[in-house]
Image (cartoon, rainbow, N blue to C red):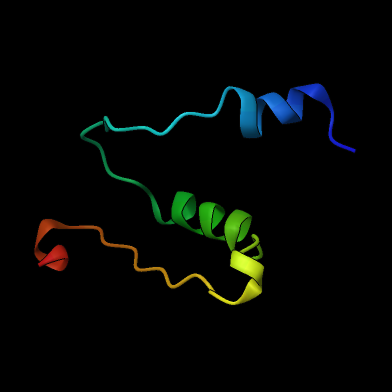
Length: 61
């Protein structure tokens, strides 16, 4: 069972962010994010996540 603090973090107080800071994200930060979410659940495990990490406006195009 999850603690109340964990439930708050994951569900009750979770928010989508729509504002970003104009600063780079390090390779280490990207790796940490990937390691945290790579085994996360998907819809009945039928839709594995497909991720693309884009680090520049040129790469986005």
